[in-house]
Length: 239
Image (cartoon, rainbow, N blue to C red):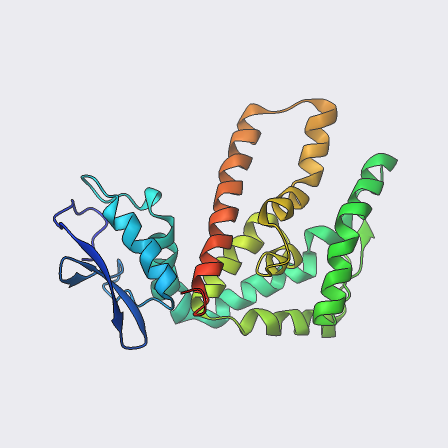
């Protein structure tokens, strides 16, 4: 089963072990990606999550209601074939990480950023031996090459499924450090998302909320949390 435009024809959805991973079966037919590759999954938990999405289909298949399936397809069809390019895109965020660019004023915002973001930079320095530099304003700051190399190595050590999740975690938050933190169990995903929205939330609190911007932020938050969930499902031990 490969086409997103297909309508439901199956009665039973099951999970089965396959060589190198797990498969989802619609009746007896294995699900395939849009590129018609086998949907071979790294964990039983991910297979179960995808099976639940297919079981919930009524009528036409709609990928917007199937976030785990959608990311698994991307991991196989898009990320795996161009792993190095995607990894470099993710790693490049380290050179312009959100946490490193601070306001010059007002004082209250400067202090709020330092209180919220400095602990994450400290964590990255301790965990990855990568101390990123902080600047004020929008003038670019050159980060130590050895620190960026260490962070890039962490990104490249992921699997295609993990990199698919990390791509979204980093891109949505604007921060490689926040994205990497989201892959660690000691951090709460909602709290990390709030850290990425500190500037916007501060502006809304002091100058009023923009309804369209708030709606867009809510959608991005949902995708951030889904990406964190996909990372957790990507671990073979999460079976």
